[in-house]
Image (cartoon, rainbow, N blue to C red):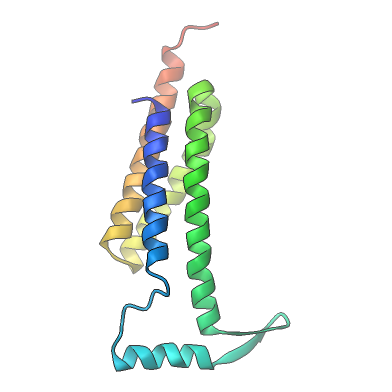
Length: 146
């Protein structure tokens, strides 16, 4: 498989993951009275952070939205990296390896703290990155010296 194909697949899976994550906004699946009380409590506790008044709810929403933006950014970067891997696969390998380590870590965190869908998607992205990394190496070796 060409590295660009694996990277484009990773990009699309990342885009779907971003859409799925964002569609869960505000990420409060527990609609019980206890869950509503917890959200209310998170919204009620204010504290000063570097001159700004914030709540735990602010941090919860802010981190959730930050993840959405980062996933969208990763999807775009993976697509662009696919184009770069076509012309200079050897130069793309360090970026592919870095993204692989990151998505493997995300898969581990999903396994430890979240649930099946993000775990499977992060693992699929990591697998695509591993395939892209390996195929960029083999493609480079298969090309005749210029």
